[in-house]
Image (tube, rainbow, N blue to C red; front, side, top):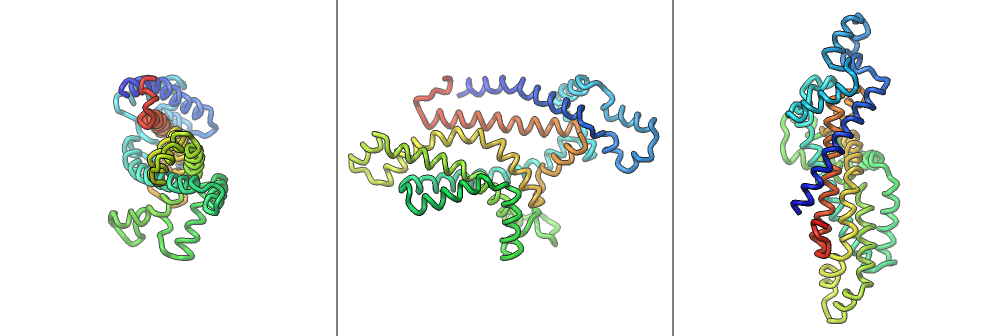
Length: 321
């Protein structure tokens, strides 16, 4: 396991370097001017000399490779630079928002895995029955439903019509402090929407995997030995049927990140969504590069987690294979 993680870490280094260079290259080719975005309305009346001085202060007057290399070497030393649009260090921008984004994504991921696995097992136990048809139809429908549309629908139903859950934010409008109770209440809708948007893939993988496992000879042999149906289903079929789903974890990380950005925007959740949008529209090089590295690292870690879980679940697969 250690050797596998070490090899993946070494392979991730050139990938992250290439991704950051791509961010700077795309930003350099963008028609947006970061100096004018930084200056705001004051840039409309500023002289060209002042704009050139501001361009030099921000470091955007340097060639593409020089800007990227300066940022990369500083980042390796722990300095991610300053965000032009946020007017504060990039590390502070990410630090203030990352925890809330992780909380939302982790809660939604748990909802998707638990509900998807449970419904998949129940549907595979009696394929073609009412539960299987209903849940499968709903899963195929949710696959085509954008996360932001589900979020707007949830706000309309639970916040406006039923008035049982808050429409967004982190705390109540009249509250000046952040309490665990308020955070939990405001987390319900965005986490449920994001989790449900990811649920169809886990359900379909588990359903198909468990259904195939129930037709295999080892499971038939377990039934022939007189084992209880619950033991056969959970102890034999589920373990074998979960293997394809484990490989899905890594591939869903990019979709989870994208969905989290949309859901955060819809529900005004104080994560990194707003910072990402502002960094992209203002061509904020340091913040864009840091957020891209963060997302890429999450994808790499998700793929590594999939491989580790697969190797743990199936002893025939070695960690160093």
